[in-house]
Length: 164
Image (cartoon, rainbow, N blue to C red; front, side, top):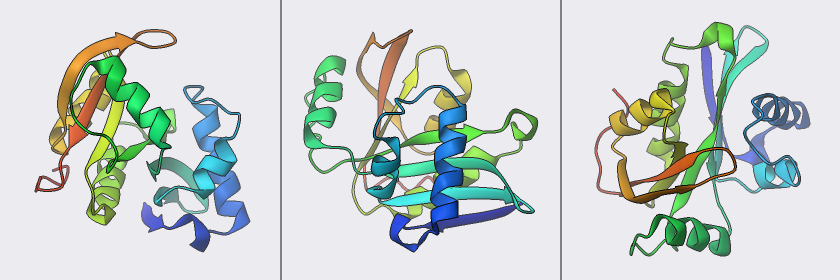
């Protein structure tokens, strides 16, 4: 496996297209405007098996209103302005449970110089385990998402865990 982290501005159009396609294939992310959000991200993590892209994670720069809305829904008093968001995590089914997402999370978090937040479905045990290993803690209360309850997780800048 070949793991790479890049700024979107350093990616080729083909890499951005592949990243977009893999995220979209997961069916969990709003597709409208996704390419633009990918291009505005802080960093993108890629895992290749030879020429094939098999896993991705992004360190996003969400808009202030979006962050405020999520933090309000969770009922937390944390000020979200400084936070980046980690997400767009998707690994092809045949490659899961091989540490790809954990490795990419660790690589991207090493790039972050601010606190980071993430969201996960309350029943997505895999995501919740990865977030816990990476130093995230649940904040506030679960809130209603499109299809299930969502939990807000935060990782402050002083956390030293890197997804062992």
